[in-house]
Amino acid sequence: MKPYLQYLVILLDDTSVAYCHANNPLTEPKLIPLDTLRKAILFGMKQNLMIQFVYPNYELPVEYHKVIESIDHIKIGREVLVYDSVPQMAYTNNLVLRLTINEFITKQNDIASLLQQAKRINICLTDTENFQEEQMEEYKNALATLNAVLLNLYKQVKSPQLNILTDRMQLTEMHNCGAGISNITIAPNGKFYLCPAFYYDEQMGISNRMNHKTKDASRSVGDLDNGIDIPNKQLLQLDHAPLCRICDAYHCKRCIWLNQKMTWDNNTPSRQQCVLAHLERNAARDLQLALKEVGYLIKNEIKEITYLDPFDIKEEY
Ligand code: SF4
Image (cartoon, rainbow, N blue to C red; front, side, top):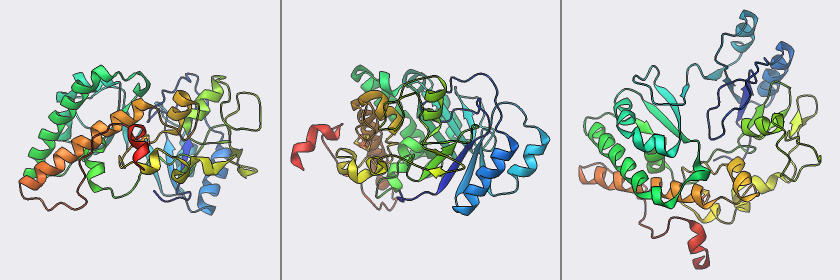
């Protein structure tokens, strides 16, 4: 992950689709004013950022299209489709499935059949915080089911991607979400947030647990008039994260919103996040070994490890 800003996420509406861990609790449409949208795009252009527009589930007024099309971008909620379930068909090559852990386990065969149709599936678990160690075996088994399907497709010289299994095979360093580091979000109110989840919290009056300057529920880190202002921004960085910097679950989202929610600290992950990421990392290793077995040339071999949470091995470092 490059330690500088590369992406600008623009929430076009309060009801724009949630595409990551946090659900969007906002139900009243509130479209970004056209003028704010223009300013946000100008900010992105000046900073040379790739823009990701996040769409609501309704058609935007026609005058918005021209402004949006004035710059290169990705459309989340349109080109990248986001589902809170597992659809029967992949209507796009790149989709996000937001599922609870139990939904992921029970729908593993449906996900397997989607893998035959899409180029990339991103699984995003929406209840990581509720993960119980008793679910570990079932989660591992579901990953093994998907590994078997991937192996079969790779043998047919197809190469679909499933973020939680195939990303780790390619990575040689951390490639996490990067909220507040490689990407920043602008909400319809023209303010910056580390990611959409912080905007949702503010709008729901969930009080400030960050090292912010205000005592209210404000979670913004600047605005379009005054620029980005992240207090103690070094605390978001990997080198200030004692557990993550010794970890090799490189594909892990390292979600700072989840960290705050679970440990009240931006850079300290919960055990749940780490154990799930390590089950995926180990399953990626199994897939890598199976591919090697059938003749694939493997670079970046994933090592065998004996822990599921770097907290358990910290004394060794
Ligand atoms: S698995 Fe845990 S320690 Fe490793 S990157 Fe993810 S949150 Fe950090």
